[in-house]
Image (cartoon, rainbow, N blue to C red; front, side, top):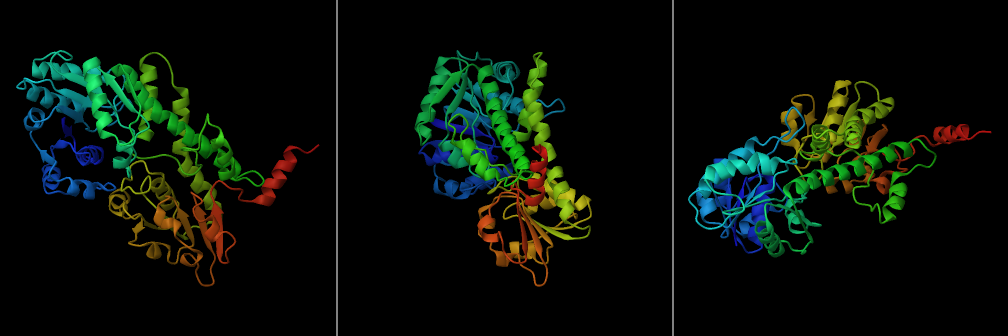
Length: 453
């Protein structure tokens, strides 16, 4: 099998590199001349963990082009991984996917052999069958199922670990036009995936719903843990890690995504609950749980800043460590760390910030509101308070000496409780592990009053 990948963004370029790394010939397609040039030179077109080295290692098996005809005529199966941004309704726009399907259809018109087209971009129920399939049939002059295959097969990955996640998924999900297309794609996955995952095949519509349902369920679990963290801060001896460790032991729940810290962000999770709610309304029902999850998640940064502001005075210098929405990523879209920074700046605090990968994209969003520093030391220097907003491994190595200041106490809010052992009880440091009882005396009295007879 020979593969082509349309769209060389973080997911597309990583998938192309990963498939090539498994020994297959891969052709990438992108409208960006620079992305095509970089791939053909053996370099990564975007930042993603291990992408540069994987492309370099498989340079002979991976090339890129602007031509859909080149890609379609010289491969057997095409993955389409283009943006499907949210529109004003909360749905996922097919604008870029429609353009890609038009160009693929035109290329298919001159191909005699069977070709399988696989949409990987996240879309909503009905989009593949009613929004995109007619385009490719019209442009190719061919019949889907008879002359070419079509599948919807989204990936379950996280930015920062795309290659690893793509090659080792919990399962593969395939929505298929017919048995032939689905069986071919399943066979391809068996050869590509390292961990030989189970495959679930179904109709387009069920697969489209399953994808956003998985993401919405995960965000609900994250938000539930964050709710518990908020409660733990207000009860005697409260400790979110103790609580979630117990919860996660139950096999019906598991510990995955049950941390209790800042909320979810990035380009996918925040929009999926909104999209699920849109789908529900469109078919005459509701998805209230998804709507509540979204509201609760969006309220967390502002509530956290409100709680922290009681410890701070206007004009204080606050350092924020971590700006991307998750570790090992440069993406700041919907980042709760960024929202915390903006809330603090709006309240008049002097902000310094640092992120190992996201300083540059953060600067474009924040403008001159914040001083972005080139190191942790420069960021926390002379800070009255430090917020660890991102659980990046580089922050886990910090010690009390990295925070101490002569003759001045420093407040450290650790949203991920990474430095509990290093900072708890240290002279000169007021350490606040988020999700743990903050005022033990007050919380004890509060519970005593609740049960007083």
